[in-house]
Image (spheres, rainbow, N blue to C red):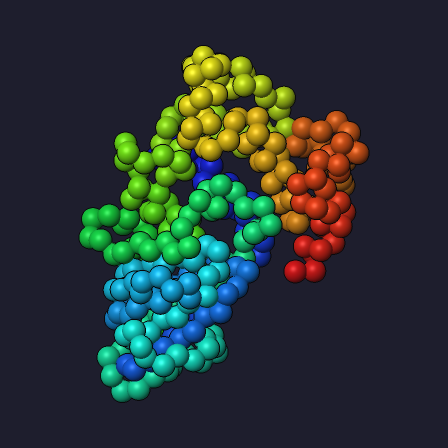
Length: 302
């Protein structure tokens, strides 16, 4: 799938900390309440079945074995054995819950994502991203879910290393599966962007060299389109013009460098294409509302 490195790059840039997760073995009747959160909640139905009840009043969603759900904006919700069952607040330290009825095994957790200035890939996701188990589709995702279920149920040696690695990979796998389900000629936006070869290639160029002095003509020439045709095609697919996206990605990259690396502000500015530390600081504050140094101190304490 052309352009998937861009998806990995976007997800890496948006993540602001390690994922947290907890195993829950539940027996009917049962219900778990998840409050609104700043992170992106996720749930895997490793065994059994349940219902997801969104906190915004929208219709409950039936979940079966092997299903995955991502709540990218942390919408409050509940998981229940059936709609109407009483609920208790989710506690990751409580692994067994409920009565004496049918058993389900769940993995529930949270990804920490930058919600101050979300990337369009994440911003355009619905409040509930549901990827149902479907034999023959999304095999990598469902293989990962199957391995997680086996590891958590058997609790074999090494499980503490295997589970976090699989959970980290699941964020990309769930988003990719959701995009693939919507990649058809009638769809627009990011569900098709990464399979549009000229647009995907231009995004790869921007992501690989955010500090380069790209112009629309430069990018158009690299992907074999006229300037006007490229600008129109990119804007329709991505939702904003090429240079607007370039500016966005430069600031996103700067935020990641400030969070994750101990580089000087001058070095960060240079990497994303600013020759002046002052100009970089001004642009960063315009986008994030705080100066780069303040942002670094704030995120270091998270």
